[in-house]
Image 1 (tube, rainbow, N blue to C red):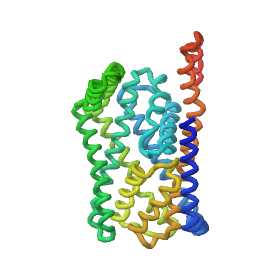
Image 2: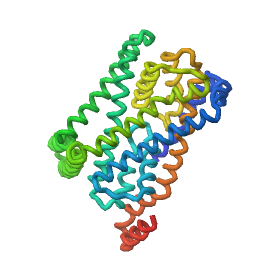
Image 3: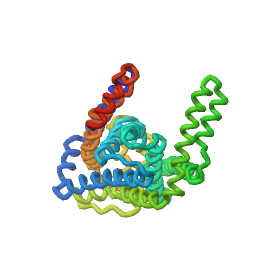
Image 4: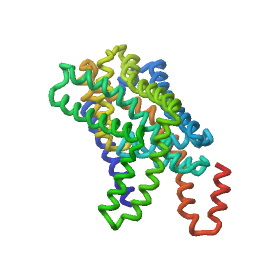
Amino acid sequence: MRSTLNLVGSVLAGAASLSLVLYFVGWRETFAAMRALDAVGILGVLGTVVLTVAAWVLGWGVILRAYGVRVPLGRMIGARLSCFAVSYLTPTLYFGGEPFRGLLVADKAGAPATRVFATIIVERFLLGMSMALFILVGGFYAIVSPDIPVGEKRLLIGGLGFITFWVLVGLVNFAWNLKWVSRSIRWLGRVVPRWRDRLTHAAAKVSETEDEVSYAFTRHWRATLVVFLIQVAATLLTYLRPQIFFGAALGLRLSFSQLSVVFCLYILLGFFLWITPGGLGTSEAGAIGIFRLVAPSITTGQAVAYSLIFKFAEAIFVVIGVWYLMQRGLSFFGRKVGAPHGSGGASRDAKSDRRS
């Protein structure tokens, strides 16, 4: 009940925020900017989102194959889109749906669950590294730009430092298999004796997963390099979104430095201000501020139109992911919960798994 109320509350808050943005900006101006897209522009927006999602699926597929994990293509695509949908609709753009993705494929993978989750960690970490690469470039241009106030530069430096620090920590931890996460869990078990047994068991599983993750940088380094390049391509498509939209709608050409700063600020917005489902309201308000700093010639209505048009394109895959989760995921989790209570649970699971 509490989760349902929180979800309903966040949806209402997002809808109210978006309504306020459209009220002050002017919904007529916003929709006029969206209608300015011609057929080529619409195909460009859709194509960018489709290719980005395809790159995510391809990257994860390469990692799965390198680890010897065989998952039916339909199950892999459905699990990846379900992960995207959950992350998109919860108060965090970049994380949140990974447990659903792992559980949806673990029963069909024929491999230890720790290995499956290791592939997810590697895929997400490589995506984070590709984003960090573009963020550093964008951050450099933002810091040296005379158009950005000193206060915003300080905030930007803090955000860049936070993200870069954790990416480097993850790289050192996974590449050298230092097992900082499992060690921290064991230390917490010593500090809180009441949870010692549970935390010790959890630390053992986490340690096993860390071993599997470290193989990406030793045994599977070629596949890891390929996936990193795929993630760089996916990030580049996101990087080019403003040029695709404003080039088609306004004939505007954004410079490399402008695109870099916009990308950097949007990543920080996704990390810290994605607090409503789909970023409703917050991402539109953020887009106004970002383009006012970077490209003052872009009106507030056009900035909001840019945010909404890509949100509509992404919503296609969010709907597919939610549908898959409803059809396969929730029934699967329900069977897992209900199986211990009945003798026929295992046979029903087997029959259902064969059908899926």
